Image (cartoon, rainbow, N blue to C red; front, side, top):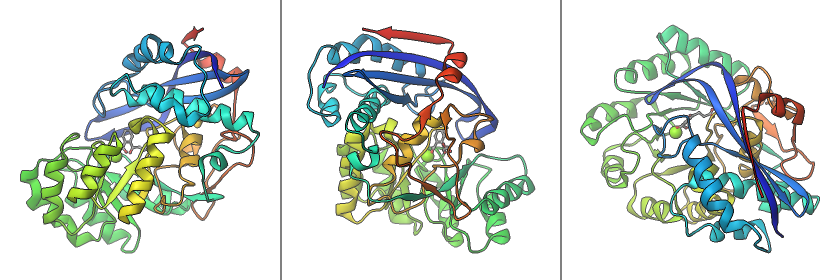
Length: 368
Ligand code: OSB
Ligand code: MG
C-alpha cells in the first residue's frame, strides 16, 4: 500500500450546548479532518487536538504543522504492508500522538475499504453493538445537574459521568446519589486536584462511584499511585496515558484500576490495541473516551470499542447530543438500551457527507 496524497481540513462546528470542565468551557470545536488516498481509496480520520493546550500539549495548529511538515514527509512515497505499520513509520517524531492518530486511523479506514470489510473486523473487534455512557459538563446548580442526568437516563445511557472540580464535587455527587441511588455513576476531574486533596477525595468513597477519572496531574503517575492507596474508589487514568510504556508503569505500580483509551491521545489504533491487550493481561477493564468528536472520530471510537476488553460503557454517545447536524450519514444513534450498533458496511461504515463537509470547510490543504 502507498498513500498517494492526503488532505487536511478544518471545519468550525458549534456544540449544541456549552461543555464545562475543570479546564474551561467549550462552545464550539475546530474539527480537523484528514482524507488519505491509499491506492486510490479514500480513508477518513479526525484529529482530536483541541483549540488550546489545556487537555494535552497538542492543538489544532500544532497538529496541522506536524502533519504537513513532518509526518507527511515520513509517509510520502513509502510502501507499507498494512495500516498496522504506520505507527512505526512515524516513530522518528516524538509525541504528537493526536497528529499521528489522525492519519493512522484514516489509513485503517482505507485498508478496510480496500478489503471490503468493516474496520471492526480488520481490527479484531468482537461486538456487534457497544454499551454507551455520557459525559456531562459542570452545571451552575444542583437542580440543573440532576435534570441533565435524568434526561440521559431516560434516553437509555448505561452510565453517567459528571465533570468535577474543587468546589463542584461532593455536593454534586451527594445530590445525584440521593436522586439516583442505583445508577452507574462516575466523576472526571481532568487533573483539577493535588495529592494534598486526598482527604476530600476520600469522602467520595461513600458514594459507590464506578471510578474517579484523572484526579491528579496530567503527567503524574507517581501521585496517582499514592492516592490509589488511600482510596477505595478505583482511579481511572485518562491524561496520564499516552504510550504503552506509561500504561505499563501505571498498571505495574498500581496508579489505577481502569484505563480510558482515546485513539487520539495514544496515537491511533496500533497503540490503542497494545494498551488494550496489556490491560487485559492485568485484568484491568478499559473503556473508550471521547473528545467531542464529529461523526468521523465518533465512528472510529465506536469501532475501537468492539475490542474484547472494552467491557465498560464509554463516552461514546449519539451525534445529536453534540451537533444540530453531523457530517456523516447515517448519524450515530443510541438504542433505548443505551447501545450503538456497529455498522456492517466497509471501513468505518458511516459515509462522510461530502457536500456538507465542503460547505463547512474554512481551511484545506492538499499534500502530494
Ligand atoms: O476528559 O474525557 C475527557 C472532552 C474533551 C476533553 C476531555 C474529555 C472530554 C469529555 C467529553 O469528557 C467526552 C465526549 O462526550 O466526547
Ligand atoms: Mg477524561
